[in-house]
Length: 623
Image (tube, rainbow, N blue to C red; front, side, top):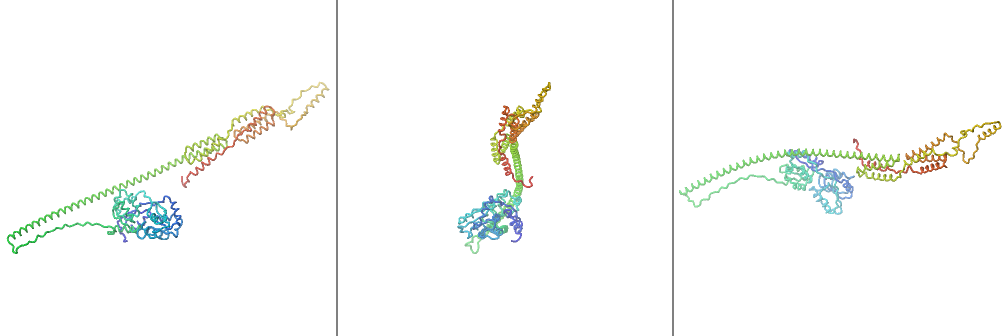
């Protein structure tokens, strides 16, 4: 192509943004101006896992069909290895064929020769009889059903791998809308029927101007779609949908006489013709005219002259009227052209103002959405913080319940803490906390089943025994006074020397006392130690009372056993008071002051595990 054939021509390119660069470079190399207006966004499919599973079975298929270059790039990206060697690769056009060759290193086996679409591919002789063959069509979501249905009708088993999706862009580019409004777009290009529909939908107030522009499409089906949408300018179908064919069609569109399949009507003025009637030839005129004949000839000549002059005057009048009409028509046409220019300027100005309003509205909408997102995020943060605070309170209450039960054996306090924690979880109304509440309910039932201990009553009984120690009689051996503390015999007066020997004998007998015992001899207890023996027994009972209040079962039982042994060893248990004392000790020894306590740590462990699972991973650098 000669360079600069598109000088001063603006070409609207509607390909997706990642595919428009090649065509834009060709347009600009020819001197034109490429105006980008992507009418399709290529997005990931809704279910990429389904496409991956289908492509993982690629070795089971006989024919692999790519319907577009996007299908090639996105489909091959989901493959874990190269294409199987025995599979036939089919494409619908040259652009798709180049993409296959560039990305796989092997050219496709099947491709149309003339018509580059599904119909052209279906016309190949290799695809006429497909009985017993399996075909995989790699396409975008919601593609045409013609190819698959036709192949099934020819006996093939057809499956689809939808590897990408198509979405309508959020808004039309402001630069493209402005170029269209200012008349800087002379040709529109489109290679997708869906893209054409999106283009008309996004044009808004610029739709009338858009529909009047020349249009270059890549296939006959797109030409029919354009006609249905109301494009009434010239529509040219390129030889192919690739960049080179589209650029060549654009050049043909703007070149005079280069529009194929189109005719132009030229208006040519018509000239009025005037017919002149020749007078009839005179028959029977004599060779020599007479006077009457001369007068008749003169009269006839005068009449003809008058008629000629009248015809000339009429022709002049008609010519003047025609010139006046032409002048008036020219003036009216000029005025109409001025009005059209004024209307176009006003329309362009209103369109620019509308675009400005639309941009402002879009910016306001964007700001509103951003503000809403910020408010929602703040609300979620506040709700999460409140929930975290309540869960922290529940954790503290469960910890208190475990400590009071384990270290102080305070069952009522543990029950109260568990009930309060369950109330907090009930108010939270979080389904994830149901396992924690179930664990708390079980622990409450276990605690309520523990038998109660009347510590106050038992402590009062121990105190009563402590007060009764003072009334316990000592054993007989300990109650004897030592010889040194016996009262001295009153002095016996010796009247004479004969009574002296008798007094001496009595004193000698008092020095020795003989007693018979069947038990080991106990040491004699001095009177001042009687008080200490009673106080030691009181201290043992006091130790038992303190152990009772603190729930120390081992210390409690040991202290009571020691008190019983001391009572039997140092006090007279044969008396009524001694026997009652021992019976009271025995009853206290039988009391179970520290029943087995259940484990209530399950709810706390469940809570902390649930909180860890619900807490999202902390992003590095997050405050």
